[in-house]
Image 1: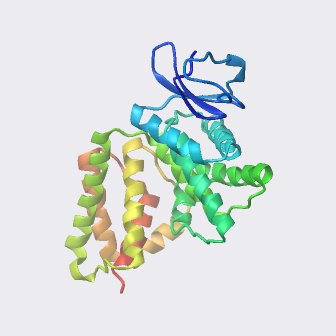
Image 2 (image 1 turned 30 degrees about the vertical axis):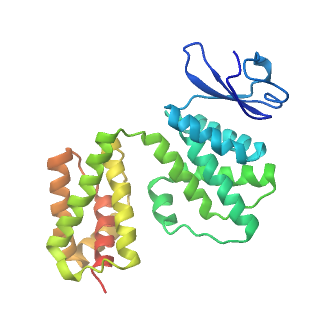
Length: 276
């Protein structure tokens, strides 16, 4: 392999045997080297293959400014996620997660607090990814001596979930339509009762985005807490009517059966956005 571009002392650009652009990382890989120089395979610690040239370009630009130690810890976190989940994870996560963790560390160093308003939902619906996020925080503290807030576990989980989904544009459009159609059903039932300026409405929309993702990847949320579900169903009759219509709509358009627990959470969210 030959160097086609030097990003910094530790990162260079090359091409694989299929002439696809790759980003190579290794200690001293680009030190005192020039375009066209041969690369010692023994020096390569990590090879990145991005989805397209635009993503590769963005990754190059990002790596120019991020300390190599942070890049390496992100590699370890992503590999841990792959080993733990045993699922396909889009390699674009090397861009999104590395950028996010670098920024999170900078916020801590500047003393800027940052909370995740959707910690509860991420923890509830993507618990396995959330646990990986908690391990990641521990890895960062051990190797970089930086203590990130626990909310970051949920942010890291979200990046992992997005990389797991790897949805194409058609699916993204369908998910967006599903969210909008559900909002129309709620609006039809409650109209002016909905406070669209409230933080609860914002959180409801985020919940619907997560819900739409679960519909399209066929993930179900189940619980044995039937007593609480029964309390919700008996207490919020008007909301239940709305949720039942949403259930029928999702079954008709997506051929997906919403679990009782999903229905319960939808009911709670709708109750919040319709209570001023």
